[in-house]
Amino acid sequence: MKNEEDLVISVSKALMQRGWSMCTAESCTGGLIAASCTNLAGSSDWFERGFVTYSNASKTELLGVDALLVQQHGAVSEEVARAMALGALRHSRAQVSVAVTGVAGPTGGSAGKPVGTVWFAWALPSDGGPTVGADAIWLSSERAQFDGDRAQVRKQTVAYALSGIAKFMAIE
Image (cartoon, rainbow, N blue to C red; front, top):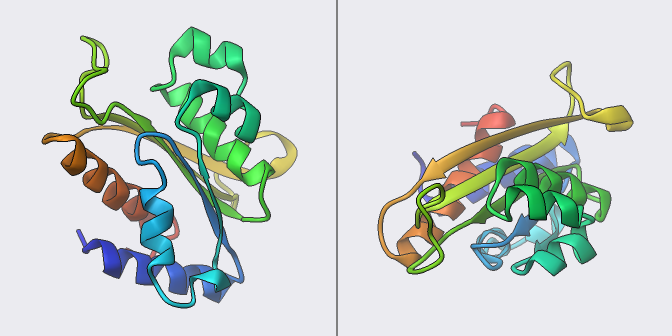
């Protein structure tokens, strides 16, 4: 896997070649993906905005995630990650989004969702892949389990999120 800076450079080039921009919807990373993107000079050409939706209420208020979805599945779930990715697109001018929700630790884990559990979702314009409604959006989600302390889980989450964008834009 490429390092974080190289991933950001690859993603930025691919977005600019397509005339697209991206946004983030972050819970457990608290804006670290957006910060990683905006560390690159010129990021205003391709980075549209970041949503830090740490609380359940903010997921609903800022992204339009249905509160019942959070109640039924929990904030750390595939369903919520997917809703966050779609909500980020709907509440921005971006064409690409990545959403993360997880348990960074050191507390908050459970038997079903131990510390290090992170759900990811990526949404991009559809090019023949599965679409969501009439939006022609391709949506993918994955669960990852990371080891380490809070800082390590969050760092791995950032890299995995960026790697997903690179993978799904076929640039990695």
